[in-house]
Image (cartoon, rainbow, N blue to C red; front, top):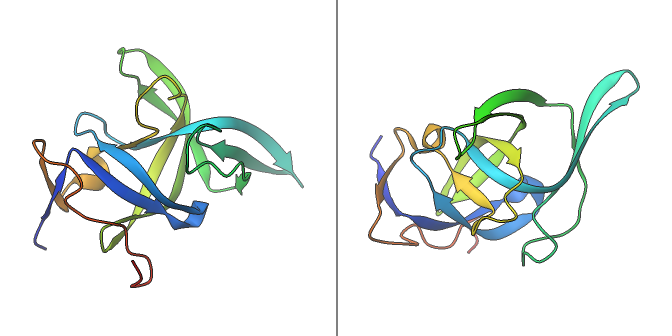
Length: 148
C-alpha cells in the first residue's frame, strides 16, 4: 500500500457521528486519536453498560448537541500531554480523510482549552500516511460516498 502525504492539519469527517467536516490536528506523539467531549455518562440499560456522550463544544461550528449512545466502548489508561495517567473512554467509528474511510478508535477527552477538538494519533496514521509538517490540508475535502 502506497502512503499518502498529509499535512499537520487536515479536514476530516466522522459520518457515523454526523460530523461532515472538522479540522483535525495530526499528532504523531499521540498513540490514539482523541476528540473533545462536551458531556459523557456511563449508564446501565437493561443490564448492559451503555456510554452516552455529546461531542464538541457548543461554540464549535460542527457541534450538533446530539447524544451518541454505544455499548461498544472500554476504559483505557492514557498518559495526557502533561505526563499524568488518566482513565478515558475509548470508542470506535469511521473517519474520512480525503478519499479514505478508516476505522478508528477515539479517546473521549476534555479539550476545551485546546485549539483543536480532534487529534489524529499515530495508530491511525501508521502504514497509511506520511506527515509533511510544513504543509496543511493536503488530503482535500473529505469525500463521503464519492460526493465532495
